[in-house]
Amino acid sequence: MNFRFVRKMRLLLALILTMPAALFSQTFTASVNNTTVGLNEQFQISFTFSGPNVNGASNFNQPNFNGFTVVSGPNQSSSMQIVNGSVSGSMTYSYYLQPRSIGKFTIGSATIDYNGRPMSTEPLTITVVKGTPKQTGAAQGHAGVTTQDISDNLFILATADKRDIYLGQQVVVTYKLYTRLPIASQLQVSKLPSYEGLWAEEINLPGVITFSTEVYKGKQYRVGVLKKVALFPSQLGELSVTPMVLDIPVEIRQKRSGGDVFNQFFNDPFFNSYQTIDYKATSNTIKLDVRPLPSKNVPKSFDGAVGNYTLSSQLDTAGAQANEPLTWKIQLSGEGNIQLLDMPPLNLPSGFDQYQPKTSQQINRDGTISGSKTFDYLVVPRVAGKRVLTPVEFSYFNPAKNSYVTLSTPSYTVDIRQGVGGGTEAAGYSKEGIKVLGEDIRYIKASTDDLHRTGTSNVFGVGFWTAAFLPLIALTGLVTYKRRQDKLAGNIQLLRYRQAEKIARSRFKNAKTLMGAGNEAGFYAEISQALFGYLEDKLHIAKSEMSLERAIQELQVRNIDGELILNLKDSIEKCEFARFAPPSNGTSAMSGMYNELSRVIIELERSLSVKKHA
Image (cartoon, rainbow, N blue to C red; front, side, top):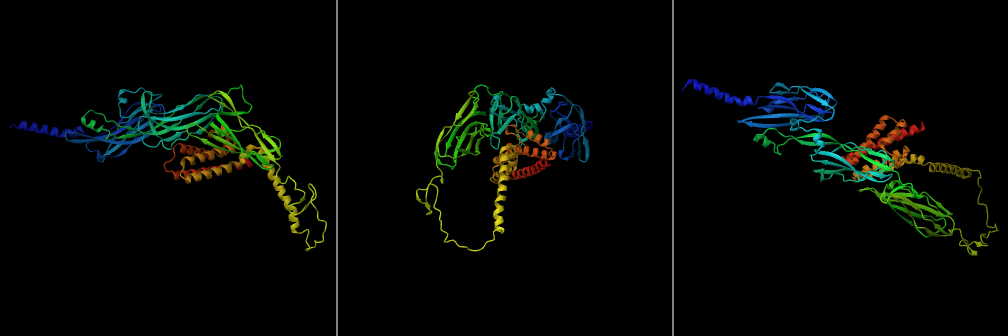
């Protein structure tokens, strides 16, 4: 055999044997899905190590991302390839970044150790522009996604069942999540909508979001209802419902490039790796056009009620004795803002005393706000005879009929008999055996033969002075108390101010009972009403004007400590968030919320009392 031929064959064989090592030498590179991005737009940057021994790479250090916010990362993934019997792999560390300002920025080198030898990537330059730049074909085909890609497949849509409404008319706003992307974990509320100029009532929803299928603009989405709220406008003109903002962790599947059979194999869903991107979804703004109620044919008994109602009444008895109380129950039922309903005053005939009615309400928050409100009037007849209780009228505006409606109770005829002690005994002897001499004169015993002294007494002793001054002291206390009660009754704001802490304590007690029963929805609703009710009464804010922003303004006017105001704001927002999405740790979360809100109200009560007497 030719020696030169053998030598050439050996060299060729050696070259073939060393080709895999040459093909799969170690590299460490940086790449970005787009070098020009828009402000507030997310982009992906990846650092990839490739080599025959991926396990030999360690101690990865990311570069400094000055000028950018890390939205997600590092997200680690790996892949493997086999060429001519040689195994090679790659390991990728990827991040999703979002620019903070416009300009040119340089992302420095990332480093990694391979078998004790340091390796580094080349720096990358990113240009940030205003708006959203046009995406190139290469960028669109990259494994990363843009904010626009996500927003096309995941968004929050706010809808109102009506936009053109009357003052006080109920409108229901619904927030729905539309998604074609998998969601990694629980949603987090970033910002709740505000309702300036609107009275808000939450509509009951299940504690867990249930998704259904819905076609929107020709595309099929999974849709879940996030929030429903009934709104009642208290101001005229155009009112805005601000957007709702959620932080949603979205799972994006990484695709592998290449067309050989091995890449196709690893693109199988079983082998796909996912990256979680924190996406901030913002709903649209709702605009409502509020017009005034008609000014013609307004009934005298109209007091601002809007909706659709029925009226019923009941008198507990048709006959009674003088000085015995009667209960006249009047109930309003229907759909509308039940809490703000009120009855006109009773027009009682002479000879009747009327007391403040006892009011109770039942509110149904399923779909729309409806329910009933009951007024229990206590009336006391003082004069015997037949008396007529005239009808009581209640008027409201019905938007569906575009007209005012007046309801009235029936009239009641009451037969009042003379009360006990008002009559006379028959001639002769009374039940006590005393001779009755006339209409109202009883026999007086004239003889004193059976009277005798039983002992001496000290007229001016302790008992005398006690008997003399104790009634005077008691009378003074009663007069002071009566004047105070009359003052409170005449000053509704002062009465509400005095009772605010007592009512809040009662609601907190109810909330604690609900917490013990594991009723999360009831607990958060009760404790929220305790907070807002306390602020309404303590700060003299009408229910129709109550909002968190208004309460904070009133506290600032009263020079309440800024840190305490901030704690109150955080506590209320946490409570509202919990009503929307109850925490997973159940009783523990409720207990923490209860303690936190109790502490805030105690500190606020102390601060308001100090400011009031300062």
